[in-house]
Image 1 (cartoon, rainbow, N blue to C red):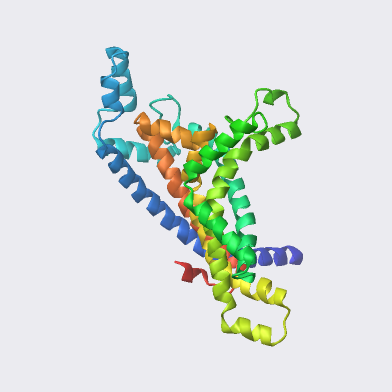
Image 2: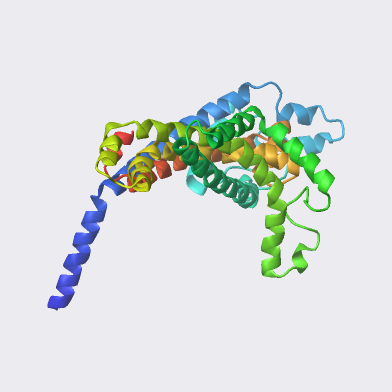
Length: 348
């Protein structure tokens, strides 16, 4: 009994320390703020969509190929003649009570199922691109700062200028031309090959990776240039600080000065960018998906906008807002993990 009581006491103490911990309270606070932000964003997005000229109802009524009975069924099914405020609150009630983002006008399927179906492809390509971008940009930025004004630094700066000067759609077009000249070495279009279902598990992974080469490169090339310059500038700024000069004066090895003392402080501003990069996965991947026929969210959203598919557009906008909130929260927590001196309440 004593052992049981001691176990319950320790469990209660651990639970209390968890509940009262700074991190958990901060996460709860940010989640509540995020829900309020999503509510305001949904209302603003719905209002903007309603103010745009045309709409699915207008498109429907002007289409001579659809019978009057079918049009009446569509209007009744989707509530297209309800006042906008009524449509919004009906949609919001479905989202809150059932996590139901409504029915797609175009696909006649739940919006949530369409989004869930396309999310893996977009996230896979975009996350791999972010990893590659950071894996390339951070070392090049560090090397450029360490070798300041030397040949290699000037070379990297020229590369970064070129990378920033090319719009993402130009990069995608150049990669398409390259793929055409190297055909069939690099595939263009879709996420898998025709015989994908017949491949082994490892073969399926390799096949997806093979199809990811071009769209991932298109995202990485346009993303690494700015990050490289930022890393170089931040590290150069930190290396000029007095405490770095003091560390060198004490005889610490140069590698330790750079990679232990300077880099830790220089990397902090870059970590905050992760939140925005996570939220930009949707928009950043759109061009690559469009040019390389990648079956992700970008193409789906484009079709929804063109068809005036109200609830599909709303679901996509809410996903983008949620990704921005989640990305910023993850960036704050990562920043706290990298530098324990930072207090979460100071990151508001």
